[in-house]
Structures are given as structure tokens and as C-alpha cells.
Image (cartoon, rainbow, N blue to C red):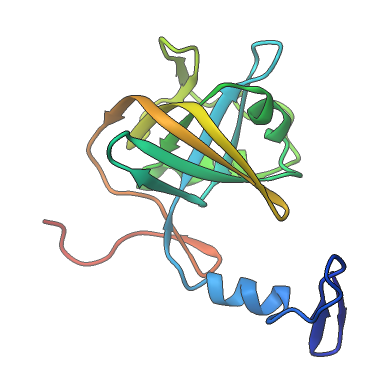
Length: 178
């Protein structure tokens, strides 16, 4: 993609893009999203993980979810080589965990973060609000991300409030809870 003043061009098609990357990013900042840490193990069996808000359910029967991962993410090679991954849905008190897994400046993101290896061999972040252990059933390369579709094999759901990301900052749900 190449931008000139108000127009951006797609190198593949040579056509102008409808919006600029900064316009796109500005619009998406208005979508409040839950915060997750996606975990797996690399080829050497070491835990690997990254913060992701591009996560959603896909299907109830069978139980499917998806997560979108940037090709430049530190954990992308481990995830793309794996057959399984876990999604740890973070609670309100886990902002520091999210920040740790979002940075590229730390080699061992699990250092100092309590976790447990599941029966499927996946690192699960202790005290996460919920956890989903998934088998990868489909992979889609789209733009600068890969969409991993996972069939949920095991799950855990606890109590508490979720960590939310909105307009470039961490937040919480407001108002009375049912």
C-alpha cells in the first residue's frame, strides 16, 4: 500500500483504497473489546503467548472460536506451527498481564506470570476469567494477519468482571451488574 495525500493505493490491484489505515484504525478504536491472552507451546515445548482482542465465537455446534494474529507477532511462529492453542479471557485485575503479553521487548513473557499446564499441554493463565482450549481446525491468511479457527475441546468459566479495551486504553464495564 502507498499513500499520497488523501488517497492510499493497494499495490496488488493498483486501485485506490476506500479509506486510509489511520481512518480505519480511528474507527475501530470505538469498538470496545474484551482482552485475551492466546497461549500455546513452541516446537521446544516452551510456553508462548500474545495479547489479542481480535477474538470471537463462531459456532455453537460445533463449538468454534476464532482469533486473528499479526504475522509480525513474537508468538506467531509458535502458533502457526501448533495444532492447539488456548484463549485466556482476562479479568479486570489482569491489566499488567495483558500489557506484558502485548509487548515485543520481553523474551519470556511467562516469567513471573502464574500459569498451569492443562491436560492438553497448554499454558493457562491463573485467575483468568475464562479459558478455552482449542484444536486448530482451519487457518486463513488474510492481509497482515492469520485467522485461526479453533474447536473448543475444554473450557473453564469463573466469576468476576472482564478487562475491556476501548479507544486505546484499558477500561471496565460501568453501571450495575445483574
